[in-house]
Amino acid sequence: MSATQRSVTGTKTETNEIGDLQATRKRDAAESMLKTVDKSTQKATGISLFHLLTLGSIGASIALYLSGKQKAGIFIGLWPPTFQALKAVVDKGEGTA
Image (cartoon, rainbow, N blue to C red; front, side, top):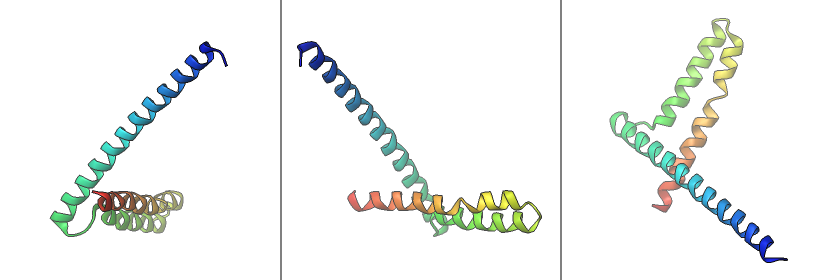
């Protein structure tokens, strides 16, 4: 492999590492923000924000479905697993802190 090829490969690797680091920082900032909002909601209400969102979306889904807006009800009904997955991400971070 020539020196030019090694240089180009090294540059791509360094660029990928920088991009990965930036993505990690953004993800850490988002997780930190979610954790902060969840803790403040839990202090105020005694229930996790994500559990409130889950219950609210289930209720909204049922209400929409029964009011004749079946497609909207089904769409909203797909949200609870996402809220529970976000809760798992926030809880996972607490074990390492």
